[in-house]
Length: 193
Image 1: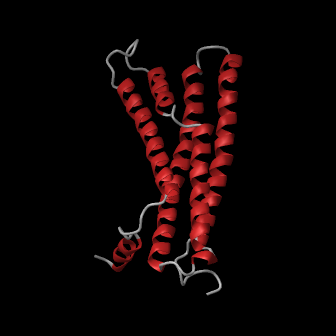
Image 2: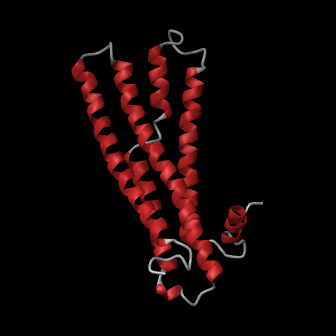
Image 3: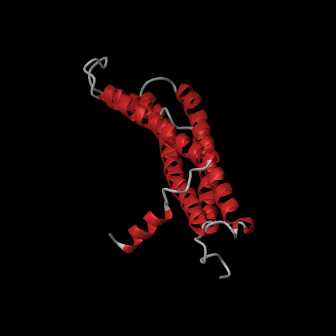
């Protein structure tokens, strides 16, 4: 076992109980992961279905892309941003001076968990943004040669606004992640030491 792996194993001490914030953040990430997996499986089923009307076509592909990305959007990203805020709050609380007399291993474990949960939050934020862009592209691709441009615009403009909103929310989440990592430097590695 490498020294990095051993150090990481030490930071996730099994004797240190999980706190409510850590459990809720992890459950939210798992739930959003299940939504994303459900969208992906639904898209794969649609693309591989023999019952797609008219057989396999580019419109069926665009429809599958839209179905696969249906889980993503501003609401999902807001939920992920709240997970990132919870991680930041957790790291800030554990790294604060009021915990200077608590078992250093426990503090290090909670700080490590905050950063690990935030790592997965960043993955969710990036995937949510990519899913929102995929939704926008799928609507444009699906309707490209069909209805009038005003009909396509009536669908694409709200999805474009959603993509911009998700980009802003994801950017705030990634900034929060950077702050969490900065705060959660392990004891002895805090700024100024």
